[in-house]
Length: 282
Image 1 (spheres, rainbow, N blue to C red):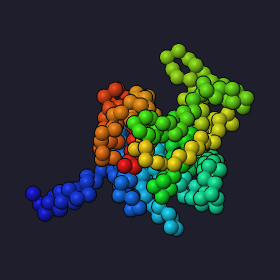
Image 2 (cartoon, one colour; image 1 turned 30 degrees about the horizontal axis):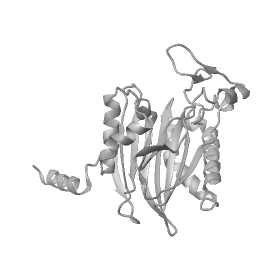
Image 3 (cartoon, rainbow, N blue to C red; image 1 turned 180 degrees about the vertical axis):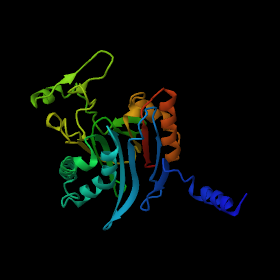
Image 4 (tube, helix red, strand yellow; image 1 turned 90 degrees about the vertical axis):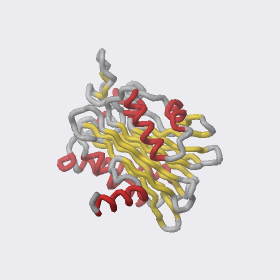
């Protein structure tokens, strides 16, 4: 074994494997709050279209845990743009600390407007999103558009923190905007026969019939809050909220928990890209 290989082994033992599709971290404010993530590419021929954000960041005198999954479609450029810009846009909102719900909604809308303006550069595809901001290890602000999902385990019970935006549940709004929802045999319902979610970033050709307004939830983490799962629909297509919570309730390491969920989704024959973040509170 060469000196470089020995050094790599020592580094891996201390820091863990250097895998861009898997990682972990912890809060400096509370040693009990940790996160881990794991991504697996699906069986489609196109490149991986999921992107994650998972980090702790100090802003003024506050610590923020920033967690997100962006699931792109018809290309990955919009999801990649969101990874680099959405949280910055949220934190630029002057009222974020006092009015987080309105601030997140404004930032989502303004970010989507920018994506549409940059469609020549970013393409005409789009992305779903689920974002979670953990403020000082106490307050969780979750937002989503599309079918990526956030679920809290509270005393062992799965509590949904997001709402899946499906064409069938918002068909009246889509029709009122001049669109339609297809429901062909053997296929899922789609907006204008194309997109299987009713809200998303981008998708310029469909935006007149859709919206990018997020569902936003604010949740205080008390002693019953154990962990939160953020995952793309590659997981939720084959697992219920409670099944996901039950699968990792005894796994203390957050990255191991995220990896276990992706492996379980593969065992259940999920063929989509699968991205998962687990944030443990206790």
